[in-house]
Length: 190
Image (cartoon, rainbow, N blue to C red; front, side):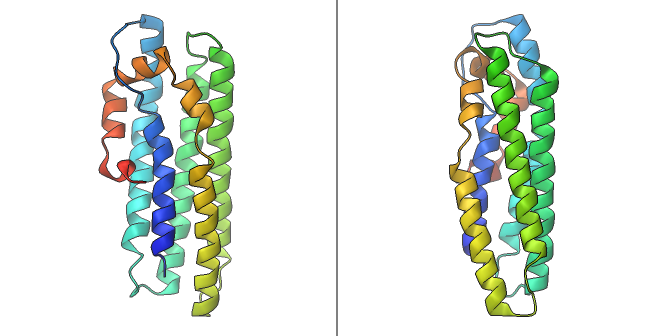
């Protein structure tokens, strides 16, 4: 009943993966310091998102009651909302990266992260409002939520991708905390 939800949810983890950058070794101390600050803040949030994904996938068995699914999903969506909000705050706090159009890239990424956080908060409210007494209605409600999750996963991370182009991505790739955030097994599905 909840399998589509789990599949859709793993798409959200792709956004965290976007914060891991790619490799390169042209060093820029200012940019490396910025990347370290962001990566250090992202790592615990990436773990939180991966744990929320795992919780939902664990609760997708057909033997779970609607109440159990509702409680787990609501908590997971809240955790994801909090995590994306925290990542947005970290990127905001780090300031603009020392690259061309750095300020615009940073502001766009923060806006996108806060938007994702709001979307997960909205999904949490929708899960809370589902009728767990009527299995058919509950399943229909979950389908609607899974559809929204699909859209959320596909709405992509354009601003994050733009933020991490070129030198910023290379600086992030040099940070241990970004490497470990991206190698989380749950974050690589999707």
